[in-house]
Length: 308
Image (cartoon, rainbow, N blue to C red; front, side, top):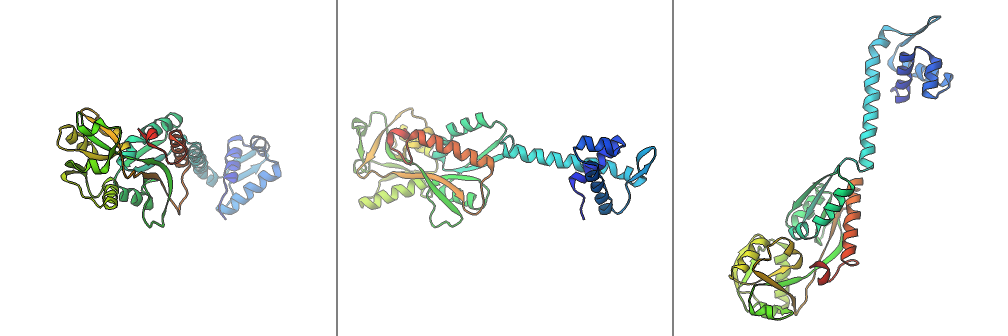
């Protein structure tokens, strides 16, 4: 038999007040219920804790030794309940996110600012990584929520579409393509291309477009970071096809953009969550903010006007 927190509180109250009557009043228990609690506690610890005499109730030597321990156990219990209450009330906790760099820079900042205003004591960690790493981090429970393209064949995560991102032609200022309101892929591919890494989801989507068109690009240079591609375009080294959300990552100085058409190929970006474990209260609150901000861009996947 293990002592209960109720029994410990009864023991401490009687020890401090020296009276069953006063202890029953403090704890809002009847005297018979209080006596039963002490009897069960004594059975659990294997000996008598109180000596009853005409002068009142006194602790036995064993009871005096046990009193500091009982107080500590009650304190630990109340602290644990308080900590848990703060987690449920979103007064403490941590949320870890994994996101494509385009979403980390182009969508999440406003979400996180809103979340931080509502829940200032929740710690936030963001991993801006490749699409495969986003799914991996969520699958391995190293991230609570992911933001990426739809993962392929994942049984440990679920995907919820959020917004549509569209490709744009990025050119140095004064480039002839900027004279048009829209630019076709065919027209863009006539120029040397600054492309991002083949490992990125952006490059993989562009390769799908090329396959659809039966075309190839004149690859001038391949870079790892979208920001680097933007600066190379600004320097006049070539043109590029980049996601519209990526403009939050790069300096617009020296470059212009136009929507890419023929074909128009949106990338659906969304939320990745684990299928086998529930989200914490703090993470669920983060999802609420994410969906609210996505709704402000348009219901579900949206159009160019919403993401620029």
